[in-house]
Image (cartoon, rainbow, N blue to C red; front, top):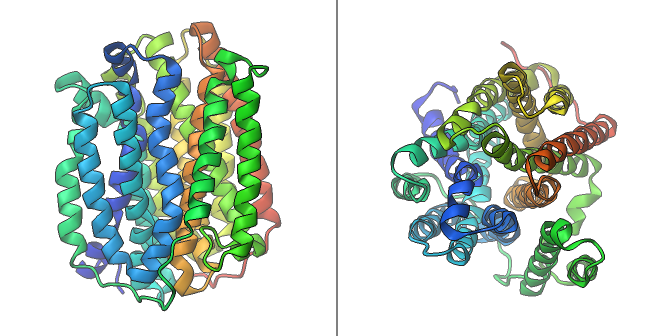
Amino acid sequence: MNPASPRFSFVVGTTSLAFVVGQLDVTIVNVALPHIATEFSARVATLQWIVDAYTLAFAIFMLSAGALGDRFGSRRGFVMGFAVFGVASLLCGLAPDSLSLIAARALQGLGAAVMLPNSLALLNHVFFDAPTERGRAIGWWTAAGSISIAAGPVIGGLLMDTVGWRWIFFVNLPLCLAGMLLGLRLPETERHAHSHRIDWTGQILVTLALTALIAAVIEARPLGFGHPFIWGGFTLACLLGFAFLRVQQRVPEPTIPLDLFRNRTFNAAVIFGMAVNLTYYGMLFVLTLYLQRVLGYSALHAGLAFLPLTAGFFLSNVISGWVMGRFGRRLPILLGASLDAAGFLLLLSVAGASSHILLFVAFLLIPTGMGLAVPAMTTTVLASVPKQRSGTASAVLNAARQAAGAIGVAVFGSLANGDAAQTISGLREAAWVSIGLLLLAAWGIFKAPMPHVVPAKV
């Protein structure tokens, strides 16, 4: 299929809309956090939950959503996800207090969890027999989602400066309506003859385990690691995680099919995706606090400071498909990880009056590296499983990435939970952690088997 054809553009544009809407709400709320804190008298831990309630629900429910898409049809899940997301966005905008906002954010995450894996499964279904076009389509799909992550703070800042923070949620309503109407015109995927039972036990166990883990991490600095809530939370998370793995080994249709992890290439790609999300989401949360609390930026100024993220994501995501076609999947992942780590290396120099140029270069390198690596990483995951399991594999990948993002916000936010000096030192500590995680994940990709890809003719 010609990448310039109307059909290519429609399929990629429609499926990308789900990624745009879902990823936009991961970051658009960040620049509004100080204003929400003032209106609701919320502490930093509450702000972390406003971010993580969405990301955590996104991660947890994506596991079942992908499998259900394989069973009942990905188009149906795609349209249903937009409907849930729209209702939840309305509730977020009308929230009277922080607890209501956290609950509505969790419902938003549920809608996003249904949308995203099914959008990628629909894309994979259309282009499965055309590997080159599939790589380019995934590049554009990932570019759209990545740009929306980067554009979130910018759009949020503009809305904050004009109509108020509640409109960062109301803006989703026309997008969700468009997604539902366009989604009905996509071809439905094959439905597979499985029983229609959901692994409710596994779903509940993984929900409780991740919630206990995130709660313990968020409260660790305020309460101290010796507090019963903290060590009890970590202990409970470990016990529930172990119980979850045992259940997955025994049930006929597990929430996470453990046999997927027998593939070293699949494992390396998923771990790399987790490292990318943990470092990016966590650092974005801390940088938002740094720009507004330490440098004194307004919400709009802080949002505009993130503009280099958008340019870096767009250019590198589009180039990644071409690089994959020429050199295979390993090179763009390794090169992307190196650029990403270089951006975090620059952030080690932040201070109470950091150079705009230093921040600009860092904010350009980080998304450029991510945008180059993520499409190749996503293609690697999809290429490592049979076509009929693409929805499940996509769900596992994106659930792992979103869970890692929630952990990143919890960990990095805890490091920067304090005054201006603590914010600066926490940002530096987070940068060191990010560099280490990215280099370790890149080493895993370097050592993993990677089937040869015939270079595309240009």
